[in-house]
Length: 293
Picture 1 (cartoon, rainbow, N blue to C red):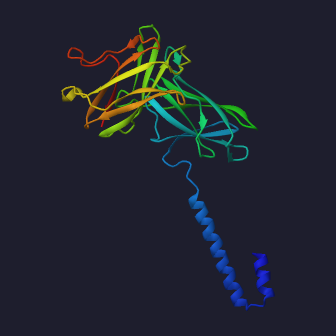
Picture 2 (cartoon, rainbow, N blue to C red; picture 1 turned 60 degrees about the horizontal axis):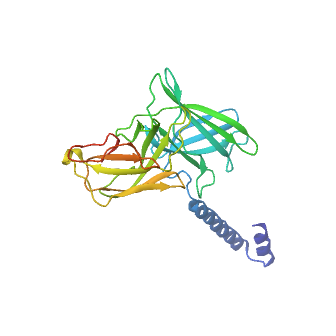
Picture 3 (spheres, rainbow, N blue to C red; picture 1 turned 180 degrees about the vertical axis):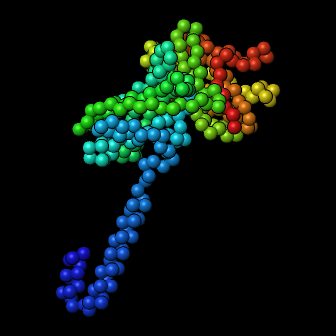
């Protein structure tokens, strides 16, 4: 701006014109800056702050789409702030452990790694499948290990987990005597349409370890128990996607109401672990999840 003023003086423009030109240039610069700011994407669009957890060096903002955690599958998002310089961290390495502290025992939950959200500078994401809600006597805690170039620390806090109105996760003992967890990931907002169907299947190794099962066969049959137990056409059985270790298919929902997703789960040797085929004598599988809309 100084060089522009000096140039205008040198060409001997009247002072009123110099002031007018200077004001006009400042306005153009300010408008350009506002446009650039407006074009920057909002990293938190569609997310609601759940809570903040912190220690002496680190603050972690925890977000979900609904602002709550419920029994079943939950996508969880994070931003990490270095409290020593009050700046968000773009290159953190994060690990986590959810633990349910029951009156007589403790256990963890199926979870994914925490990864950076593509296209975001400071946003991280993972998922947890909560098997049960918290209550006054039994609480979920979440511990997050944080590594940055300048800080290595852990942050711990208690989280409320509410019950779900539908059965979106189920635990079962397979014919191999192992304990499994089957979780409904999507559809989150079912519609009268062919919906994306995504499922997670996990096996209990120990009370603190629930790795994904990636070599199973999952068959499903959607039914409406209140409408003659009819099914629907054009369903696509889910298959594993090794990128996210989840099973992806399609579920056709032909009308609104209560739907029961009946499942049969087989192991890699094609042996049925749990579930039955629907027939005139079998209205519902012993392994099912629910949708209602």
